[in-house]
Length: 157
Image (cartoon, rainbow, N blue to C red; front, side, top):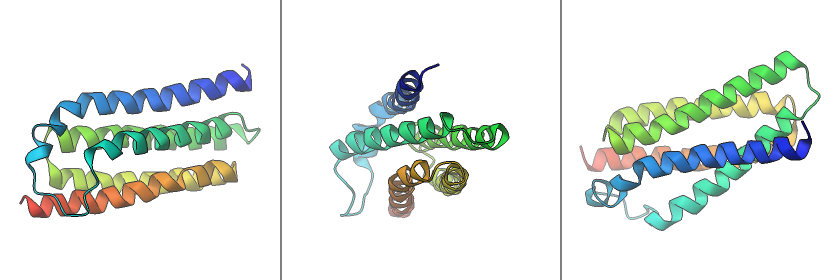
């Protein structure tokens, strides 16, 4: 498989699955989420889609860099497994928060997600430094999202 094909697959899958997560929770944005008490520093709703699209794009490129690397197969497989696990946790957070309306459990889950992203950064960094750095905006945004999740939970408890 060519590197171009690997790059396209990596980006289409990460952005595509991310889009799927967004679509599955979009109906809650203008209903349930709209009526929650939120802090004054809560970003406007229109900002989330471009931010997440950019983050999924960076994740796809990071994944591609690891996938195409000549690193040891076991090391690469482990890094990819961790990446897939954190991606599943990312998807699960949206469901827990937006579909189940479980803000407390969503906070617990986002902490686990944050740890999984950190593990992914470490695993990717041992294979390709740029791949690890491409995930720094993602863990930064998830850090902010965790604080926002906690604050919204407290404001609506």
